[in-house]
Image (tube, rainbow, N blue to C red; front, side, top):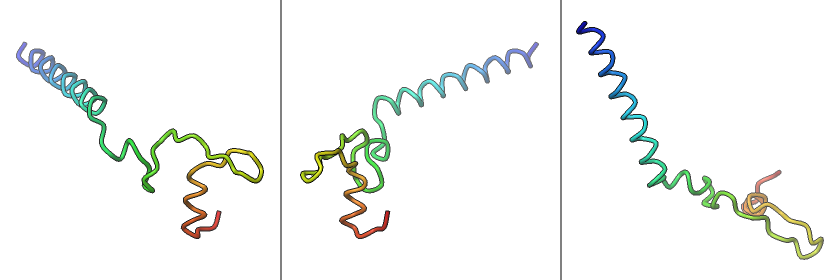
Length: 70
């Protein structure tokens, strides 16, 4: 009897902790969820290359200006 009650209490506390944690991350997301390690916001639209007119991902521009190989 007491074991069943303790198990239900454990499950209830675990569920409340999970829901509270997810709600907190949704309401106040950490900075690392908003930008990449290079400081570029996620879901940034591509930049148009003036010579070709095609879209270039911002991440590729950052790597180019840093001098990194692709």
